[in-house]
Length: 289
Image 1: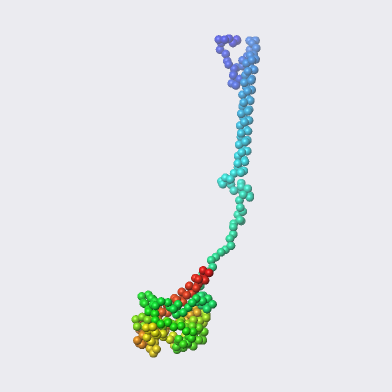
Image 2 (image 1 turned 45 degrees about the vertical axis):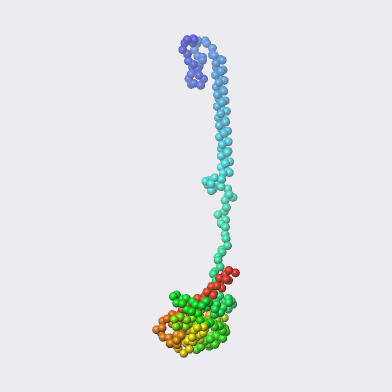
């Protein structure tokens, strides 16, 4: 069988499997088309070289990417990386918690300490310091201030058993003041000692006959000279304080005279407050130094 110009023939494609070769093995005696075979071989080799170069380039890119990723991973500061992958020196030791020396504020100063001994109770003092102004108010009651007195002879300003009590316990000063209200008069006597222990002993040693002497003058008539009056005794710090309350008309005080008891208690409470404020003022001043 021969191939003519008008005849049907198979086209050989070197890349198509089972395509017919440009020659046959029949006995028609025709020789192969060597030019066509050479051209096909050259085309095939070129395509193979392109595929090889392309694949090599991809491989190089892949290796380069892997190396880049490895370098980035080794130097990354990504906070989401596992802790175990970080260098040992990259984090502080768990035992490196900073320690601080314990600190605490100093305890507040006790005001009572400043009125419990003469070494600390050094602020100016006197009847007009302890009992300032011309009157005082306790609740709804207003008391008008009368005469004041101050002496280092504690026995001279007291009567009954109180002179001996004060002397035995080292009283160094006795201040007095009188207040009046509604026909009643109250004399307050404040004995000063060197220590709290002495004042406390004087308080305990005093009895019903330990009486501060009533102080008249400055509009206040004499009172409690012969009449029965009501007295109180107490102490705070190095101060022992006493009250004597009675009627200015000389009437005796009875247990039914509630206003007399109230007046004496008001003045005793005011005296306590004044001594305590004295301690507070000195404690505050000492804390600021």
